[in-house]
Every structure is written in C-alpha cells, then in structure tokens.
Length: 143
Image 1 (cartoon, helix red, strand yellow):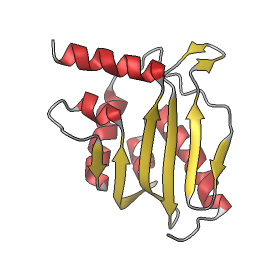
Image 2: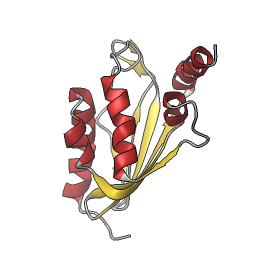
Image 3: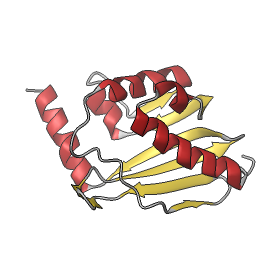
C-alpha cells in the first residue's frame, strides 16, 4: 500500500465527518475505493439476516450508509470529536468520545486504511455506550 499524502489524509478526515453530519451519501461515497471493505457491528444491527459485520465493495457500503443516513437522528449520535487524529501515511484513526460538552454520545473509534487518496478498509470499534445501544437494537429486532 502506498503512503497517502498529508493532504489526502486531511481531506478524508474532514470530508468523512462533514458528509456524515450533512447526511450527504454521494459526498461520503466519493471517499471510498470501488473494492473497499467496511467492518462494523452496526452492519449486524442494520440487517439481522447477515452473519458477518463485513461489507465488501462500494455498492454494499453505499446501501449500508444509505440506510443509516435515512434513520432519524438521536441524542447519542452527536458526532462530536476533539479534532485530534492520527495517521502514518497508510492508516487514519480518530475517536468520537463518549463524553461531549452536551452529554454522552455513542463512543466510536474510526480506523481507515488509505491508498490512492481513498478509503480501502474501514473498521469501526464501539465503546460501552455504543455497545449498549447495539444491544437494545438487537433486542428490539428479535422481540
């Protein structure tokens, strides 16, 4: 994997967050490679019939984000972050911390492998507040 430039990393860091906040699916999808991979437990909560939290390919990732961006916002989805991110030219990571100035939010860590200025592998790690909300989603789906 070739190293991304600082400008490419910064672009993905800024635009991914901005696209999600504005619920702009088209802008979000311009950040992903055609054969990108997305891993998240939210995939299992979104589609109960799936056996894996892994999606491969831009079309599958688009369908996932489309479903999520159409859902009404909730109090735990504040999208607050501190502005701190880490990168090494191949990976980009940042946190959506549990504690925010307006109260708790779903706590996530975004980890992305970057190549050619695009996200090629995106992993989302959930903290305990996020896990609790996923547990509720799974319970409601199986009730």
